[in-house]
Length: 227
Image (cartoon, rainbow, N blue to C red; front, side, top):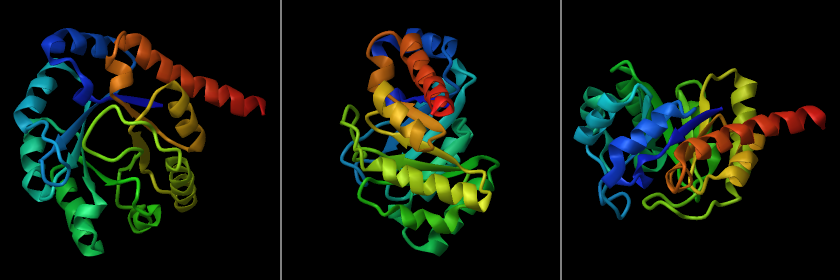
């Protein structure tokens, strides 16, 4: 199980201290929500901030573009240290445009992901099972942290897990929004590979919160083995 703390929820007055805690934890990735104020009604990070984080950590830099024109952001974030770049299917919508974007991201030697919002039909991801490295299921409306998890996301995860396993795809399933121990456990049971968590990780003891998510995955596997 991969844990990807979302720096959207970080206390930036304690950035260096909190990054030291993240680095000392069992987290493997670091999640960046990039918002342009158009696709979602909020603004967040530019590539220079990612470059700063990349200097503070050896974790995988997991960049989620919530922007109207993702092609403009790919190279700047790759140059800043991105290892994975995820774009929204809803922005591109058309199959050819999605494929061109995935190929463009791959051309820089980084991994390419495709995200969908809570109201988007998961079947729109089926055509890309062997072309994506990551599928990101949004469990809240994108744009703001701290929203409650939407249980309807679990059926999407289960369907996607089945398609990935049946086709031999190597893509990972990531979930973002309202992730804590209980919802993380439910997502793992449904077939998730990556838990993105912001408020839950950064609200208090970062190492303990990450450990709890890791243990939620371990306990889930034990429960499945006993059943």
